[in-house]
Image (cartoon, rainbow, N blue to C red; front, side, top):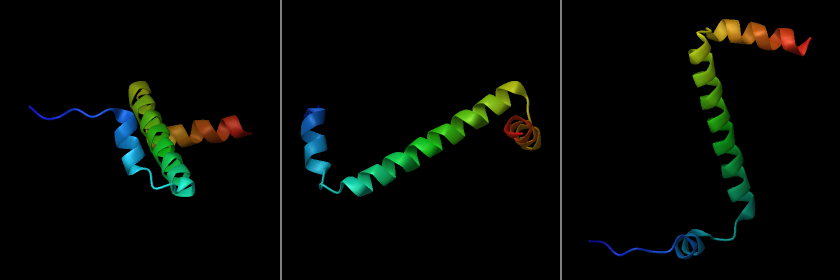
Length: 61
């Protein structure tokens, strides 16, 4: 069986100190998760992409 490592040790080894790159990647990942959740919710509600856009535009008015 393989050797186990503590998450803190792995993270410290991977962290190169570039906080701007980390923030950019975190924002990109969060945007992806939000888009995925919106897609799943549209599918759950049976909405097409056009119907979802129409509802969003009506809320913005």
